[in-house]
Image 1 (tube, one colour):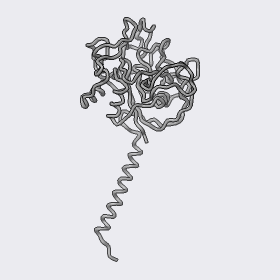
Image 2 (cartoon, rainbow, N blue to C red):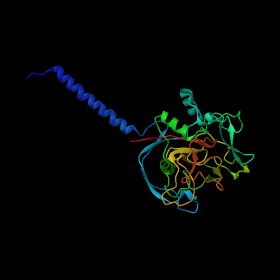
Image 3 (cartoon, rainbow, N blue to C red):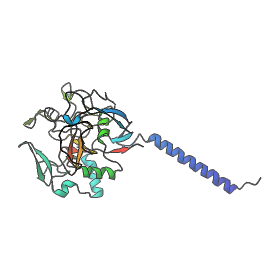
Image 4 (tube, rainbow, N blue to C red):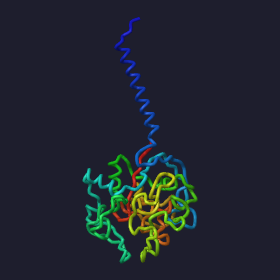
Length: 298
């Protein structure tokens, strides 16, 4: 029998190439759970919202939601990371385009738009630069979407954000992403307002404004800053949960924010609970509002 060695070698090479591709593909699939600076979250069904006497009206009712497997950034995007992005893309944020951004005036107790404030100089003091290791703020929803897209990612959905906040903890009974209390042995677990808002802040947690990313440690899930420090944008247009009949005007331009911030006093804004939710218009930039990215796993 005649054997064409050239055809045989070509055939074997093709088989080998297919095997290599299969090997690499299956191993990449296996290793997809290891993406730098992101946590793999195995999806599932959970009860989203709130059904107890600590609920705010817009957190009702408790309802089942299913999420698919996904990734989410370990921490909110830092000033340093955002600076690298700006240096490479020369992107102009909405705050830079409008030449102003939102700051809470601790003297007057009111929000105001201040000229020439943006992610690098987010505070009332126009000379105070945002520290590199703090979460970037004065970022609109539009800005956050653009950054995540540039990184090959996206903003998390509201359901993904809450699921991640509850992940690897007691899914339903924990009030916060780390447990049932904001303090342990009188030590604060997050960067929020202590004292009486807005009159005075005792700063028992050590911070008046933002704190370094990850300062309060890592959750069992591997995430940080899932309560307090800065509110975080979600992808969703804000709307009330199905069955909720409260009168709360909002528009498709209003986007969900989650997590609470350094301005949250539990007697006024208990926004750092896992079920707490709020919204801002998509072009809004505030000095207590940042973001993190997510990514599909399948």
